Length: 556
Image (cartoon, rainbow, N blue to C red; front, top):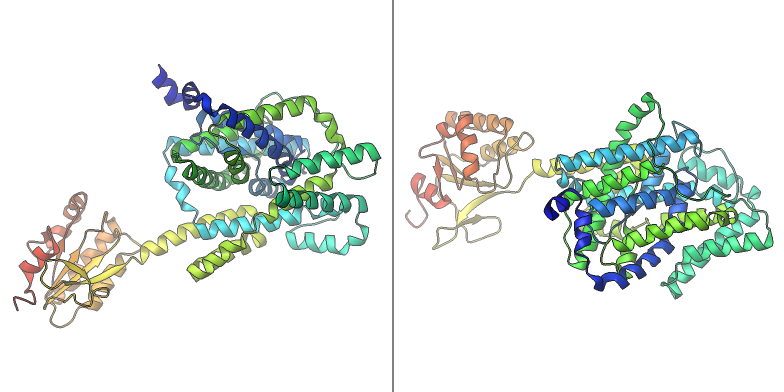
């Protein structure tokens, strides 16, 4: 019975094995996490165009369901800036931000993202986390940071302007600075100062929470006129399916896949990073179910899509979190916040939340990552730059599609240009090595010994053919290909190898293979390649092929 529970709801089964020695650390981490969760959730909800309270709904729904199905012990799942700004760009064109229709559409998007992720888990697509490469992810995050900062400028300085893209936003705010509200600007600057100073002199104190509480006290006591978040109903919303039209539902399906392609790799990479510091392991496929369930939980409570938070997760781990209990404690405190503290948010200045979001946006500007890419490989640096430009010029949705497309392009380009080598024999041995790396390796007269370090498929098969033909000289009578690194040959690759055999026949040159993997033999036989090799066409070792088809330098 316990095994069945573990397979269906692994979180419940793991709770039975909870080590009580972790309790104090988890509770302390839960309070620490709550202090960070509240201001970030409120701010990121505003960033997404939603009422601030919706961010807390997301944290509550996501935390409880991720605990049941996720595999990370410390990952905190909730509202995050990159997803919030993406949600605003998707749903902003379908309804007015903050309206009831807008909230319903965002909640439905969260549900659809959850369904997409669950399907990924069912089809065991855990490897997809590896398909967003480091350069394009760095570029996407950097571009997101720029959009996040510019989107909050109006609230920070207290002006209302018509805006479109980020350049229009900057220009409109700059032209209307003379209309800036002094009180809003003062609260914004003060919030930035409090957060940054406490981060430097007392990092254990949650600066964002201090700024929120302090600004509400100032507004409540002084009665200063400033734009505020306003009161909202306390308590939890009743779970339910969002009310959207069929046409809107269809319109959200494509964007849901795009959001899922950001949420899943980002969450898994964060979970892996934390697990590495704790000596734990992450089940990438189970993360589909955990993060998918978290998004469904958020959607049922009328909230935005969620993903794993790197900042909150590492803070929790540093504070002593050893299990998901820390996140449950933080979520329970968020519930108490909604039940008993909702009225005080009537005094929260909009500029304070804007400042908190702007600080989070600046935290995404990882200039050091770009320097590392520049030093390591210029092509990857420019990939990151192209992604930044794509996000800024074409928007978040197109930007993530560009990031995914570039990642796949990198995979294809690298696979299309695999490492190859012309092999020579090391003196006094039967070992063959790349002659470019070993000056003492010598070729065998009359033979071309060649190694192809990749599976042969449509994108790289022509390189194999062209390399072999270009390396032939007038004395070559046989080509030996070391196949140790070849796991597979697709139909296109097989056709190109057959074309290579045709050309070699015309030149009266034979072809044989060495070190062929057992799983490849059937493909060689079915495709007709094996029957056309110079017999015997397949050898266990390179030296066997050389001994059979040629003369070694020592024998010569």
